[in-house]
View 1 (cartoon, rainbow, N blue to C red):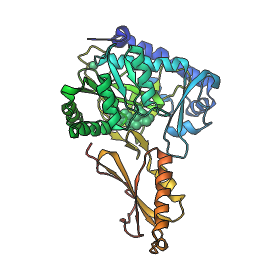
View 2 (tube, rainbow, N blue to C red):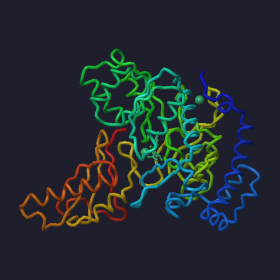
View 3 (spheres, protein in one colour):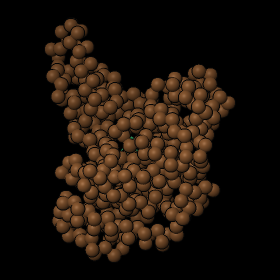
View 4 (cartoon, protein in one colour):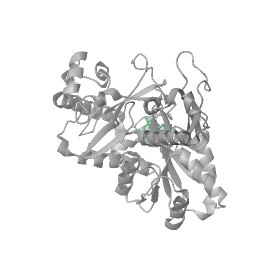
Length: 431
Ligand code: ADP
Ligand code: K
Ligand code: ZN
């Protein structure tokens, strides 16, 4: 059994909880002193950081939601001066602006430490070669994994996603042993390998892959494992909490360990905000316990899961959560990218010629099809205007969401008229 930081990974529960409590007191005090928005919220809730006696007392403090990230945007939640931050990452929000998360030097190093724990927990070592097929850029996914793998001494190939031909050549030429990839793209790459007559078991050196950024089922894991002849580990994270590596599977592949010395986790009923009973399903709420630049208190992830109560056979004392079972809001994920239906609506409603009704259909391999009704007078037998309108919709949605959609223009009255809440998103994907 391999560990990156055995002492911390196997620390006895009681000691772990002591450490959590110390760190919790510190972080609550810190945001209270340094962040006007937190101070105001704490005061309104009558919650005083000095009164914290146990971990359970966290429940007296208010939640942080994604809306809070837009108060005093973008630097308002920093507990250090802006010149101490060295990295920005963003993730889509419901409105026009992205959520912005800042990292200090210490935060970058710490997020890499946590990934190092994760990778080593699955058997990765120096000498492994990681092809990082997540998107480099504003997303956290690729960078955080990249730095963590380098820390372990793994050779990183910063491939980024797409260009499947090149992905396969990289794997063949450089002897890639591990992939970091979304499940939808992994399925696609596996199918292309088959079409090309490449036998991954004989022609490649792949041993394992880390799949995350979007939900997938146990069946999908097994399917890709069988197609590629490798072990697949579930990797969960969100930009607001560093990105990947918040939850990660060990070799037993039975739930995702959360590094509890860094994150205080709660599971709440998303409607009432109250804690659920031990082991029950609810929304994951996280407090950063070890973050310098931008700590977040009781952040509502909107991800639904449950805590696995039994200790893990691997000996790590940090508890596990189940695979993410769904979301408590209407965000959906395409190619690992988070999209809110409101983002699409905002784009469509700003385009001249677009009528009221539209539908978003998610097809196999993460194709996003947008069916949209347009003004009747545009159907006048001239095709140029329609082509221009379609291109405009494709471009604007792509720049708002980072995903290129297929667009179908329809006459008014074609789509079903909804009574009550419109069903805007139809998910036909099998994963
Ligand atoms: P990431 O790049 O880690 O996906 P984002 O901030 O773009 O970060 O997206 C975070 C959201 O993606 C999570 O709140 C969750 O809904 C989803 N997600 C990430 N990893 C997984 C996973 N392994 N299983 C299910 N959903 C996931
Ligand atoms: K995501
Ligand atoms: Zn384990």
